[in-house]
Image (cartoon, rainbow, N blue to C red; front, side):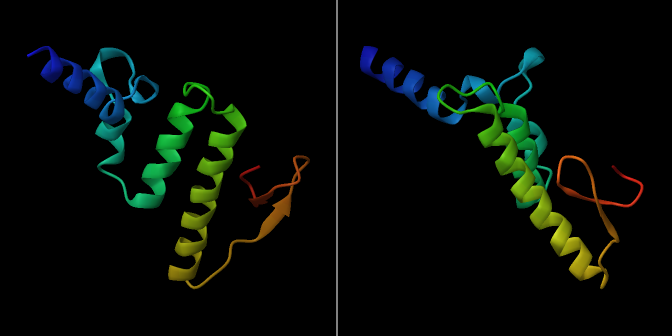
Length: 99
């Protein structure tokens, strides 16, 4: 019986890690399951930034940005156009009017 409880604890740490849990019983998966893969990963990596042991905040933010940029590329391809870009002080490209 003790082994079974220990296995459940290990399983919960793998399937419900604290860096994906927020107050009120809300977990990131409750949101991301309603999104596509790319946008779900944007939310996942943004939400856990600074919360996962051993992961630098910027690492997760860069991952979120990569998935967001990919989603933007797909949307632009689907719409048959590229939005006009301007470069801002941070060196990143942003659509006009959205800096």
